[in-house]
Amino acid sequence: MASAQKPVHQDYIARVRYSNAVPPPALPPKTLDIPSLGLAGGLYTSAGYASRLAREQPLTIVANSEMGMPIDLVGLPGVFDGNESAILETSGPLDPKDRALVRPLSTLGKPLSTNANVSFLRRTEYITSAASSRSAPTSNILRMNGSGSDTQRKRRRVEQRDDPLSILRNITKGFNVAYPHDAYTGQDSEEGIRGAEIQYEEKDAWARPKHPSRPGLEVLDAYPILPDLEAFPDVGHYMVIRFGNNPGSSKIYDPRIDVAVLRPLERTQEQATKYAQQLAAAKADPKLMKPCPETNFDAYLPSSDAVGTIKRKFGTPGAPNDGDYEDGYDYINPDTGKQSFRYNHLRKYETSQQVGDPDDCWNESVALVMCDGAPATEENLRTKPLQKAAYIYPIVQRTTIRPARPKVANTMMGGSQQREGDESKIDFMEVTISDPDETVKGLTNSWVSKLDPLAAEADADGDADGDTEA
Image (cartoon, rainbow, N blue to C red; front, top):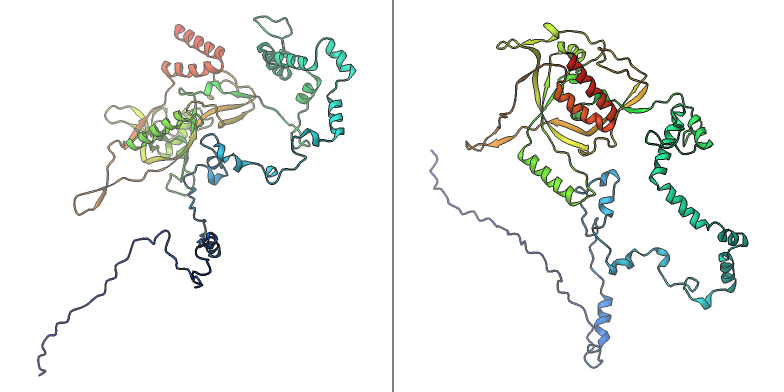
């Protein structure tokens, strides 16, 4: 049996090194090696000894990759797209002390005597040639003594060009070149104004147009650009909304996206604060565009069998009626018995990027549809035939949306996390499609009247006559 050993207690000694966070001094002391010549030579007491000693010492400069100036380009708008206006823009007028820094290279260095404005250094033939060029010939003198100088005639032409009547004549001339059979040839009156005289070059350019950079191309057909007045919505513009990723579950395109419904939600406090700051910045700086408010959406999709019926109700030619009930509806409310299309909730989306001007819907982005002409039929939902034209539709903004990130809230039970519920979520929607009422028609006519007042009045009179006959 082994003998019991007594436990031995030994203290553990650990060396702890504390870091010295105090930075080194900005100007550390430096010891210089000075030859000991004594005070007899008078070197230490001379004025130039310290200056010579400083020149002999090398400068200690540590140059890193950024030359001591870290530059953060992430916060500068448009800098990665080649737009350097945020870097080059100056906040105010240049200080007089800094004007010497922006002088051109030709002005640097010692000025030459030929560039100096000294009269006695100029050669005589230069003065003679300049004087002869300034002297007017006899023909110009006779012309000046006649009806007026060239400068006066040019000024008179400019005044005529800026005259409102002259501007209207030139605008009318453009329409006369395009539609010579509708040109007004009578006297100027309230009914019509004659256009300016059309030159031969203008007629030839319209009859045989040429590409500015590729003259070998030949024009095959031309379409006038017109707004589609019957397709205007009650808000007066359209929005282009792009999904950041495929909203469907499969990798192929889901046709239900064509008839999806996006329900805008009330802006959060964070979005409202951000929009208020952007709006205040736009009011303070006229160069900034008025911002578009960011909005969250709830996406809803119908059943796959109802897609064809919904397209047919919106006037898509050839769309089948796939519904199970009357008028193609696929759902009946058990409480009210009302038929409708059932749209189920897909997910919540948030705005990731948007571009547009809320005050100007006719901006750089428009939708373009080429039409060779269409009759006015009930299937096309048209009351007037469409002429051959390229129809444009205003796009007020382009928005890219992405699935909203779920909000996470801390709980008091052990610091765990749980997702916050969305009280504004609607599980499904009952959608019915009908003709626009008088309120919607009035809003649409208000937007149409801004582009074509006569067409808006005709539509309003037609609606009034239809109501009277009914």
